Amino acid sequence: MDNQYKSVLPKIESAYEKLTQLEKSVADFFLSNRQIVDFSAKSMSVRLAISEATLSRFAKKCGFRGYREFIYLYESSLNQSELYETVAQSSKSVLRAYEILLNKSYSLIDEDQMSRVTEMLSLARRTYVAGKGSSGYAAMEMAHRFIRVGVDINALTDSEMMMIQAVMRQEDDLAIGFSLSGASREVVGFLQESKRKGATTVLVTASADEQHKAYCDEIIFVPSLKHMDRGNLISPQFPLLVLIDMLYTSFMELDRARKLKLHEQTRKAIDK
Image 1 (cartoon, rainbow, N blue to C red):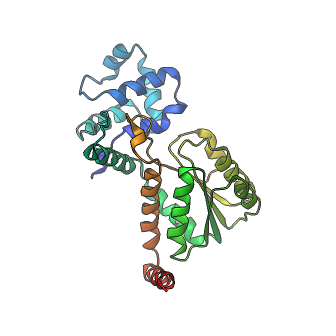
Image 2 (cartoon, helix red, strand yellow):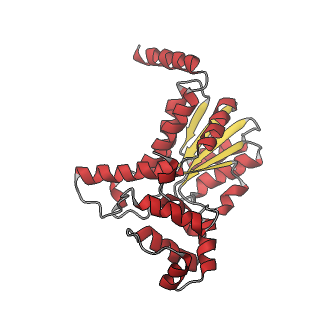
Image 3 (cartoon, rainbow, N blue to C red):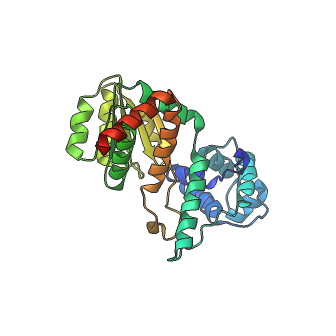
């Protein structure tokens, strides 16, 4: 997929909560619209009964240089036929929903950020990854994958253990939190305390909240299911598992021979 065909919808969804009510009305239009119309600032200001300045602010809050860049990419993304139709109770509909999430993951992925986080994993003395509920299962999956290739990593799913481990963190440790909503009190507390102790911190979330920047060195955005009808058909772990696979692949590219050897040794030990 070429970069010019990345969908802009996931970026709108990620920025949605930080928009003003007026800007949310703009977001709602572009999230629900599926037709090519006159998207010029003048025409859209009349259609939505807003000022052209509001369109410009909306575009910039969503991460674009301006409305002109946003609308160019938006029109291109409409040609991908990224459908948000009602998900029916059938195998094909579920698979289509997964396809949409994968496309969203592609649109949100930042290759430079993947490299930075991969380096953090490589340099950390010890890594702790925390999550509650379905995010906790994803945390355990990440720990299981990475420990087999030489990473000193532990998963935290218990609230008390999150805080106990947070106060014990050091400057050369890495603390990773999984929270799709970005509002998990336990995960946020774990990252905040770990940051105070000098650890490097990473939040994996679907929520673009400016407050996270105060205690996170990196914020990795994954797709949100918020604007997919019947989104409860899809496991909320899925975007996290996709992200884990991408991190794992990137991590394995560094000193690959040694890590493959470690993986084989752990496999043999388990099979005994």
